[in-house]
Amino acid sequence: MTDNILEVRNLTKRFPIKGGIFGREVGAVKAVNDVSFSIKRGETLGLVGESGCGKTTLGRSLLRLIEPTAGEIIFNGQNIVDLNATHMREMRRKMQIIFQDPYASLNPRMTIGGILAEPMEIHNLFPGKEERRNRLYQLLDQVQLPKDTLNKYPHEFSGGQRQRICIARALAVEPEFIVCDEPVSALDVSVQAQVVNLLMDLQKDLGLTYLFIAHDLKVVEYISSRVAVMYLGNVIEVAESHELYGGARHPYTKALFSAIPKPNPNVHMDRILLEGDIPSPMNPPSGCHFHPRCWNATDKCREVYPEITNESETHQYKCHNPIRLN
Ligand SMILES: Nc1ncnc2c1ncn2[C@@H]1O[C@H](COP(=O)(O)OP(=O)(O)O)[C@@H](O)[C@H]1O
Ligand SMILES: [Mg+2]
Image 1 (cartoon, rainbow, N blue to C red):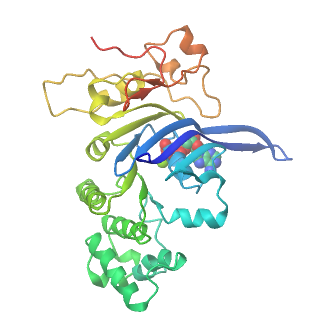
Image 2 (tube, rainbow, N blue to C red):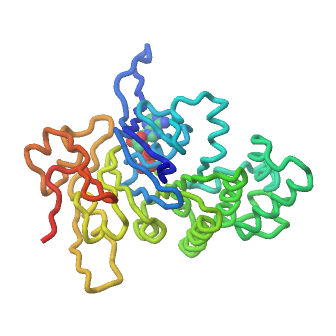
Image 3 (tube, rainbow, N blue to C red):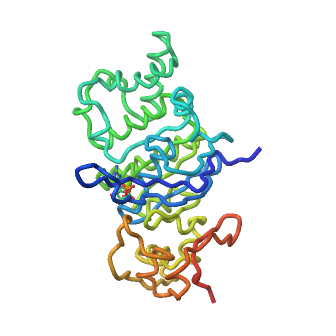
């Protein structure tokens, strides 16, 4: 048996754009384009890239909260793209998501107890009164919130506490895999580290697998064993996080990572400033989508979209003219 909990093959999501009085399709946003990668059981794969590059669309498509246009999502050996609604609901017990905004994702009219019990009711877990209450206390304990949390309402909590409640709600159904979509971006810097550390502790204790989406590369480096870099709907490089600092092959990755100050003064990296705007995903450039901003681009890059190159078992990239180390 493979130890990949998730294998994504050629995943594509297009959002049609309707126009005119007949609502005809006049174009499409190619939010996720032919993306392939895998995640090993128990690891954290980071997903980084500029705003609008398709990270949220990719994360939600994995759970089919957004229906993919094409491609395969193999979860625990099963392609979940073909599952009907009933089977998908069962599968979603094993796949959960934590959203960026803990303010918008909790129903303000429900108590925390009600919010945490809801997913267990849907999946008929811990049905007895006593075991349900014990389970609720256990969840609060796992996210380090006091017992009296259960009778309170979301507005009584800070952003960090609300995100802990969202984490507890995701854990309620005993998932194996959690998409964390920028879970600390909306929080004060002072509480970001606490929530990230909590997620790491939970991973260790419960054997969880994460896709951790973030635009803060320092957070991603801290929590992830491997990192996938996205540009305009494409995953253009995947590698172990330490490899991406000194050994990025794709010029975009190098530019992205050159912007982070390194604590080690012996590692010198010139900051690369990218010129030009991010092109529109409605009308991406020909060939490699990065070529208009790339200092390494050749004629081939302007014409042909690059295939995946396997540098090693852990390192893949899509680039015709990669950065070579001397
Ligand atoms: N429901 C939607 N309808 C149309 N376009 C969308 C929709 N959701 C996202 N998009 C577009 O898809 C692209 C990727 O968005 P998103 O996945 O939110 O990026 P990220 O999370 O990396 O910031 C953007 O151009 C965005 O405008
Ligand atoms: Mg997003």
